[in-house]
Image 1: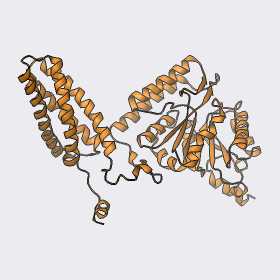
Image 2 (image 1 turned 120 degrees about the horizontal axis):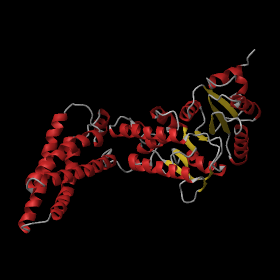
Image 3 (image 1 turned 90 degrees about the vertical axis):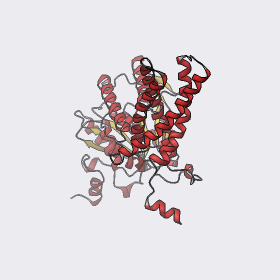
Image 4 (image 1 turned 45 degrees about the vertical axis):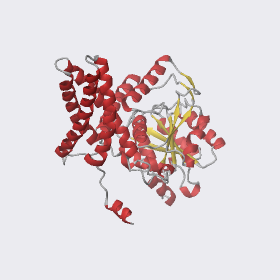
Amino acid sequence: MRTESAAATDRLSPGTLPARRHLPARSQAPAPVLDVVVPVYNEEQDLAPCVRRLHDHLARTFPYPFRITIADNASTDRTPDIAGELADTVPGVRVHRLEQKGRGRALRTVWSRSEAPVLAYMDVDLSTDLNALLPLVAPLISGHSDLAIGTRLARSSRVVRGPKREFISRAYNLILRSSLAARFSDAQCGFKAIRREVAERLLPLVEDTGWFFDTEMLVLAERAGLRIHEVPVDWVDDPDSTVHIVRTATDDLKGVWRVGRALAVGALPLDRLARPFGDDPRDRGLAGVPRGLARQLVGFCVVGALSTLLYLLLYSAFRAGTGPQAANAAALLLSAVANTAANRRLTFGVRGRERAVRHQAQGLVVFGIGLALTSGSLAALNAATATPSHGTELAVLITANLAATVLRFLLFRAWVFPERRTTTDLEDVTR
């Protein structure tokens, strides 16, 4: 006859191995502060040494209750049996069995069902020195950071690996920096942690179930303004790693394209993640600053830089067959239409076709002001110099465009795309 505690354990972890292989009921052990997940697939050789070494380290160095969760990704060798034996004999170890492969799937499943306030994971080969584990999770326990990652690319990190893996790692992180504007230094180090309340909101937005899971999670967290703590680690490459480098790299590049496209069109509701986790000192004393100003300034600058580049290319093309005034007007008109459309969608978050024509008309008025400024600058230049060089013309136009850009942002924010006040906002104003 099954005991009540065994039934409770089964309910706690649906889809895991039989109840005898689970952590004892909560009444027999304190609730863990840290849950370390070890994803495995056919790791019958490394699993037991890894878990025992990790457990010994945590028992000696971690001052709070902890748990180690073995996430078995549909292993076909003796890994499930070994995992069950570890859960039976090592305190604080449990097993979760998945019938499909995928590191991202394993982490999402276990993290989503864990009650621990801090969730972490590490690779089964323990390539990362465990002495970095406490520095990794300490800022999450204190509430100082939202996520934490180990980095092999910091100057103080000590890394032993072959030149091929070194090149691939650095090239991949360079791609992330150039294509997704990522500022974290090491996306794929198998040594990460996250606060549970952050995971509850972030994980539903992460689509990947494989190796790109880490990168997607970090990019979305960074874009939402969450705090990512980086810890330099000592790392020794595992020469027997079963990771298929070419297939993983291909999947990662596909993931970069998918996430970049979603960010470009504003398809991800990152506003749900923007600093939702308690009092933020950056919000104090800023009551007089319009909401979203910093984000809009960044978006406007990015769109403005691209629009300026487009304008200069168009001007140079038109100038080859016509005079400077006509080339300036045509280039400014085309770039202004593109600029208004991009700012409407990306900077001010206006979607749909409602009032799109009106916005373009207002944008053309702003364009007229910019035309007056740049045309006036050209007229002044021609009055001062009879035959100015092409380089001088471009320099004058760039200066005039900078002045027009400041005015354009103010007009866009206050007139073309004004922030709509909600009922709550109006109530706050009338109080």
